[in-house]
Image 1 (cartoon, one colour):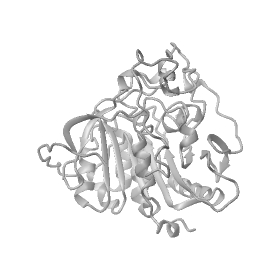
Image 2 (tube, rainbow, N blue to C red):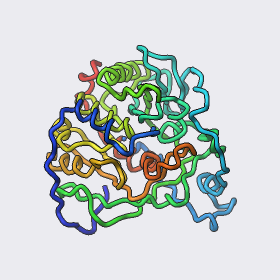
Image 3 (spheres, rainbow, N blue to C red):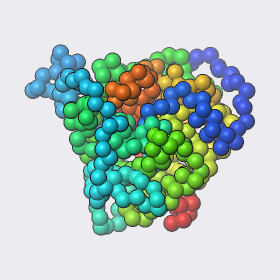
Length: 379
């Protein structure tokens, strides 16, 4: 939890427009500026996903540098390759410690990540994360070129970035954001800024990440259907299948999504709040009226100062006013574009590439459980 050192002036939220969840979904599709080619834990051991501060390039030498620092010293070559033109990954058998595309289940394409600690036999259960992709990254080659899916492999290289460990640009080394307001404050954030200093690179992310991750393919770019209630029902059934087949813990299922997938996460959470231990919505503004459908859900909202016409400030204020569960808000003042050269013009869009490598998020997710969710999942 971020400790606030100063208090800003009380912000009075604007009067909300009342929208049904389905209406919100349609509004988001039509008005969200940050939608496009976008694509939530105390740790069992404190060392896992520990922040790895990077030395300045001038101070880092091969003898003292971490793998992350070495990766960030490698120049990123110019490239006109785009993940859009790359073939889809082959269908594989899942294995611990890596992302794999599996055969479709119930007519839904999906990828699955099993943690490196996963064992085929035994009684141990594992936390599960459902990841919803954005408007332009339903194709797996695009999905895997950025965000959380790219981190879920030991070789994080792409056709446009040959580095096996993916490092953000040096201008994002401090990940500046507005300070979080205290939990009992009605404000969504404080005007003071802070340097979050989240890691620019996490070379061993796939080896240390503790979740089973379900990555469904909702649609391909040419079919902009969005995360409709029908498709979300497919995701629910797919997740239940994964819980049963891979010993997922139904009390520890969390939901996250980015951009249009963040809108899908808002919608899914409002339709089926009893399923989720926690929810994280990234770069997906939402109307404050939606808070009425999210009672009892712990939510981490992530955005950037330039997100959409609605922004996330009002929905965060509305959630905090209800005080039914924990609300976190990371409001970046700087964020990168998607890493694919084709989308470099979308500066500020990829706040997901900052938050998904921030260990605070995953510590928070693992700290939440919902024992009653076992019945909600029908298990």
